[in-house]
Image 1: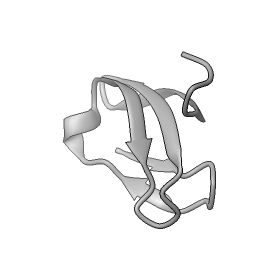
Image 2: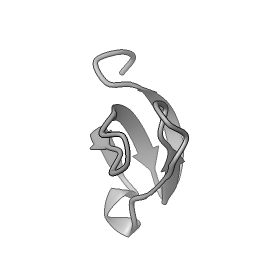
Image 3: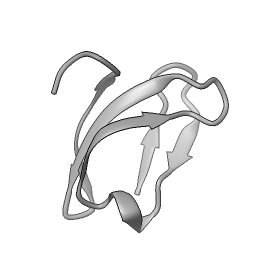
Image 4: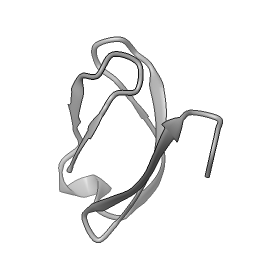
Length: 53
């Protein structure tokens, strides 16, 4: 499972632990918080932390 950081564009590798997840993730490069929702290993939504979901 991978998503792009909304702050810097860095690819965040989340692994299979996030295949069914709803909540925040932090970019290791710029430290921007991004809220994601995944289901069955597929990204359903990505938004800046505190917005959306």
